Image 1 (cartoon, rainbow, N blue to C red):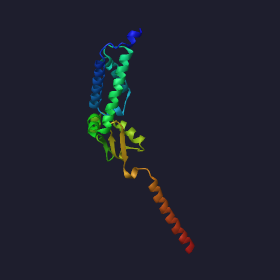
Image 2: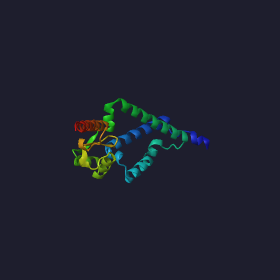
Image 3: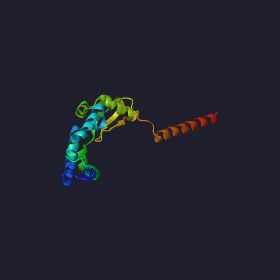
Image 4: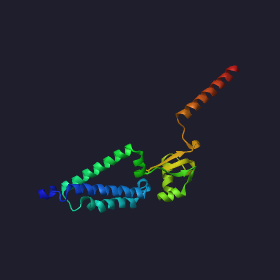
Length: 189
């Protein structure tokens, strides 16, 4: 029993290469599928992710069911992922190639239908993102970008943005000036 648990049943190099190849293939597939799948995961997307892990399991581990074989595969997967993340952090070109660039999905208060079709996004998905970012309607949005991570970032039109500290300080200064003017008028009477 103990022997079969820790005896790697295929060459270690093969196990490492299998893991690296499957990792690369899945990265490419997600890149081809696009940003939308990362942005809005619905029930069907979760089913695909769960099944995908099961489908590629044998490609990663091969005919090896040993504990040590599983650990080798897991360590390889984590190491490759760490190296790729470090590479992406240091190379803008690699980031562009592997993750893509932002896509404008809203411009001047209107959806861009071609971009929505290409990303397989529904207007309802973007409306939800608008509401989450303090907008009431897409008409209030200056620009909306779908980031490579799948996150939608919106910029409200200037008239739709909330007041900030500078706006409040400006209003307080005007009120102080009005108060001073009224006090001056009252003292003149």
